[in-house]
Image (cartoon, rainbow, N blue to C red; front, side, top):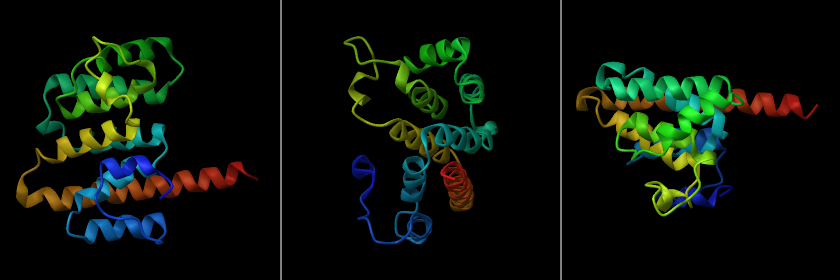
Length: 177
């Protein structure tokens, strides 16, 4: 309920459950992929980018060299968010058509740096938050996993997202003191 934009990517109605409980219920539900979507929106943007990077880094054998290069750009951008070099590299990558898992994550990493223009292939995505691209990238990577292994990988990704959300919550509560 705190993030109305998620309704464009999820069909499950919100409940009064705490976020972690809701996420685990999604994982156990009829469309467990919605737990991935929820994690993408639950995490603060920088944490969501790192989570997506980590998820896709577990799938390197399923990604081509271009995706691996894009993930390296995202890693550098998240690690040094104020670096003009990393910012420029990710912005250039983000301006490309995001048709692969790494392309979506690069788009999310460069979200703030690309403004909608008539020639910008991402212009129609601008009304969506970066979480939309994080979600698309992680789900695109997950789609490459063999069917027999997909739920186990999905579950591991969601558990990693939940752990990151819990760590972020601890950092936020520590910052308020």
